[in-house]
Image (cartoon, rainbow, N blue to C red; front, side, top):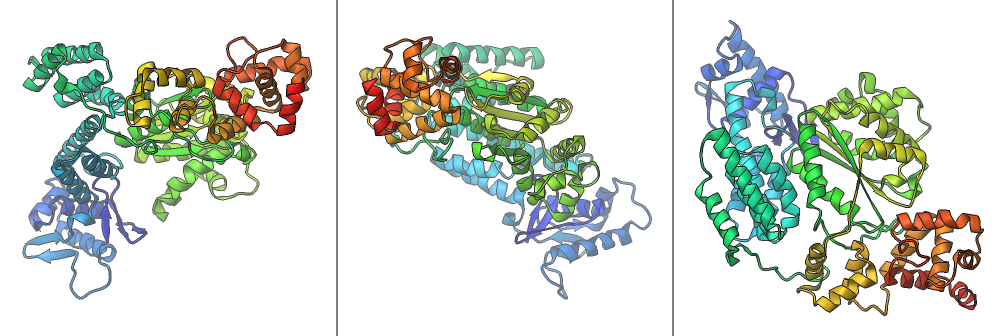
Length: 612
């Protein structure tokens, strides 16, 4: 038997079954006994706490009723003598171990992380511990003295665990991931100097010395202006070390095997997960995502769509934003669309709501789908014809709002360009009404494919943010991770020339040995998949330009591609949006693309193009 709820909604469970503990008074009794952590709570104290010092005459008999009702839920089987909720002389005690409560597991993992000698081990324990949080602790009893005290204790541990997690990321050299979260942490908890210290250190290790010093000045100004105090010795020492550029602040890059790297965007058709840059050089984008999350926590809502060419690292930015949301206590629902599912109505809504609803107890699930949200049940559970019209749109909206009432909700939709029309319409309906509810919609969109008016309208509502090319510093850091050592300048220059700095192509090229005379099969498949998704016109034009290699005029490309000259401008525009075209020229953007297109062409077509 496991007790949940110390770090979220109060529930009990046995095996895979979640049990309803009953009325609010039952829940209050259970929570008050949990707070005592295995100590006997005297009857008079329990009664006084339950009724806040003003118990009714029948308080004792009511309390015994609550206890009996709880025992029916908590005891594994009927027994002559209870073993979980036990009567002791003068009071009651809940006999549960630390592993039977989520707060107990959280505290064990936190202590385990504090005792770990290796940052990687500590990080694993801390992320598991923070993953147990589903919202503010004891939120149902925040008005009581006993609930407020325990909630404050657990919240302090949670914030400290979050700081130590970010400290572990910095110790592992993963400052590009840590800095965006630290930006949010430092400014949302400005009285905690540890957040400022870690942010300044992360910025310094990101080669942003001036920004690190600016953060320390900001901390000094806040502490002096709001509290009338100077920064503590840790911040003062760090400022002096940064000004002196002391080597002790630097972190040697640990050796990383070429295949031990994180994934970004799967190929459109095969589903293979390639490797590429994580979020190096994307601090500003993650800071923006963090700001949206902070705004949503106060009920302001928020939305954004990250747009970029295929291979630009859109997916990884979304994954990092999702991890950031989970640290903030959001419920994150991630959706990955696919071109083969564009004809399935409300496919995105199904992916969002089905797993969230299945994770709830049956009674809670029924409440979520009651009333105005009732028409959403047909969308979530049925695969047959769906009810059309505003009733379904509003029902799905109400369902999202109800889920957000349990914990702030992040809807992360990857590859919005493959979204079905009904889901596009519903997302637009949701975004226009999410300004006063804690719901954030974050999405990605690949440019150059899947364009249609409804998609453009939705992206305008979400607020498009383009993904810039990774900086040279980010490319160097990525190359060092992939190769296991800092790259030679000549190797890096050759790789950048060959791939144009595209994150996916660059990573695959380096992983394959950085030989510019060959094209890894993974790149050939990836390029071919994207060209097929762009349509027959862009595919034919790309093949023609690969064969001509920059020689010839537009008419030559059209003839080689066997297409009408009037169709060529549209095909070239799509290729340019995908980042496959070199400026205004009739040449593919970089050698890796050309070689991939040539390698993917049927042999007979290639020979025919050569004769042309």
